[in-house]
Image 1: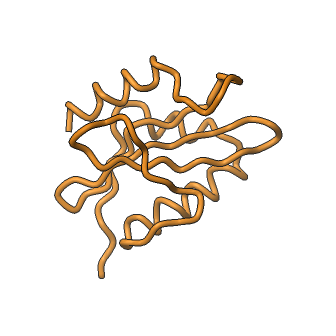
Image 2: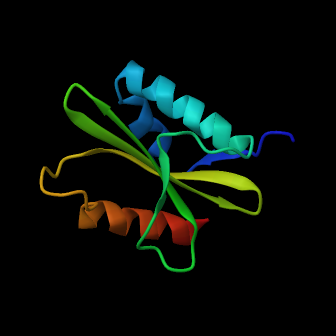
Amino acid sequence: MSARPLVFVGSSRDDLRQFPSEVTKVVGVALFEAQMGGTHGIVKLLQGFPGHRMYQASESFQGDAYRVVYTIKDETLYVLHAFKKKSTKGRAMPQPDKDLIVRRLKAI
């Protein structure tokens, strides 16, 4: 199988580049595995986006949580958002991040 095309939506590429290098290396491997049709161990299905199969790569580093959200549409992998999770309460994604993902999802 050849690699799926990888498209960064909005500022997601620049946002990902702001992550610590230790995190970007692991996330990069996870995205490559997704391009090749696999699923890395740091990736899980993301709920809360009806009608869309969404994935979240999660990595922790020095007490901070980093997230990359992507979807696959028409055999293309779209990275919709990359962010440092700021909420310390629970595992829920902050609403502004959800809203941004929805806007970017509509743009593809």
